[in-house]
Length: 292
Image: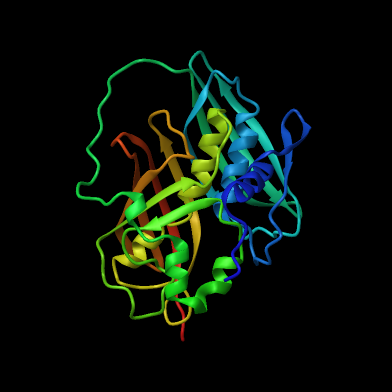
């Protein structure tokens, strides 16, 4: 079986995508991997937008939240220009607005807030119990060997993120997925990242877009593609609660509180293996049924 770029080689390519070219103090340029995809992956442009914003902020301030809107599909064959607007630099917080453009049109924009570390109240809800370890969960390769007709999709992009579904992935054929009220996925960047907290935040932002909308489909036992649903991210929000490494396993525990009007809402919590709640995400997406 021919495998896509994976492991450290795929992670190094992801790091190259996040290493934006600086055009001037507020303008950056990024590329997309040439994989034959018809549009830029949303997690990529969000991660790059966060890199651009973070490079205009003092390194002693770390991102704690971001809110973005996907406005247009990105063209992978054209560089993306990111312009960062300084909204405010206060005593404890810095706020930035990062706008991604192609062909002189906005494809994505994000507001991000950065904070100087402080001590304060500390609590969080516990993680799910009875969850198998990532080593005991099927790998993506295991699933593809079960469904070899999906190999084309698997080979279409580098596998910089190790994704292990505790349930059934959303890309299986129609009828092969039962209704599940929640979706749980073990994830990690599949190689070593540098120690820079901004890089880990951007990598987590990238990964957070990989499976969140799938929680809407799992609520109905639906699948992606022919005979199921096609979709696109409309907006994305992420809150970073505690220090973490994106190249270590975290559990992405997701569910969908609502779907209507051809839109679905999903929320997810991310926990380290030792149960620390490191991040929360919310996303709404456009979801439309398609024929077989």
